[in-house]
Length: 349
Image 1 (cartoon, rainbow, N blue to C red):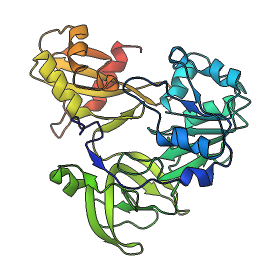
Image 2 (cartoon, rainbow, N blue to C red):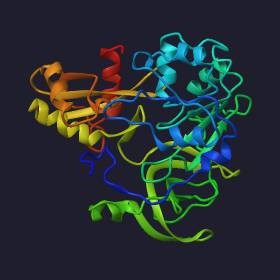
Image 3 (cartoon, rainbow, N blue to C red):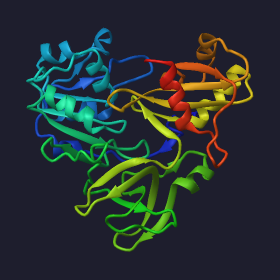
Image 4 (cartoon, rainbow, N blue to C red):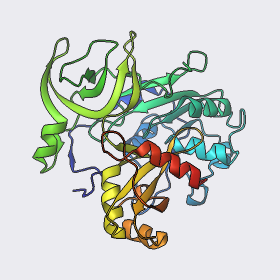
């Protein structure tokens, strides 16, 4: 059972769904993460292409951060990865107009996909359908999806829409008063269906918070999973991501709870106060966390090494700064916006 809050938390799930086979007609190539000792290809990465007689291509470890030549040389037609890869490739000037002419299907998941990032990828692969796939560890790989279309993309929204739930998934919005919202409402996204987890193993307190038996006025009584994602549903039934109800963030597809990082930062430095903020790159994709501590100056390298024993790589602060005191907002809580401004003034990642 996973130990950290940012890990799987012992998810108990039953069943295997095959929605991908209904929605992807042909696979001729599929990108996979390099197979490392702590990471194996997913069921989707292997069984979906096998089902239709396609080939799966594993990106060599040396090309993981620069896969542009791999895509072109192998003439891949299908590509899946996290949105942060787009920003990295753009920063390295790998994304030129029509640089990936063979791609016909591009799927991004694991973190919010910004409109700017989608536009960059679509220009690089103009012949490819670009899909934003939304899913949760507590549910199937994909609960809903939306195809990005440049001509219909709204400049008023920061993120590509999440889309509509797949036929065997129910999606609704829970308002702060605990009631379900109608179309046009805002609140927390809740999901229900046969492929949603039964709960967390040996964690009744978390189960009470995240899995609730509730009656929807139209969808009826179900066990709903509370995702923690703030959303809005438009009049066409499409869900739009607005942010989080808590301090969880996804970096390179991994869940990170800022409070958990702050706890280990404080323990690793011995400082009385510690806080972390998210660093967003030029395409507004979450890329790293930045730490702040009060009091004595700390050895950044030693702190990172210690924190890496307890946290995934993406949760270890990229930089750790010492300041005299943490800024507070009018409510007396740490002002993360002010800290983000301090980070931007001190560094250029």
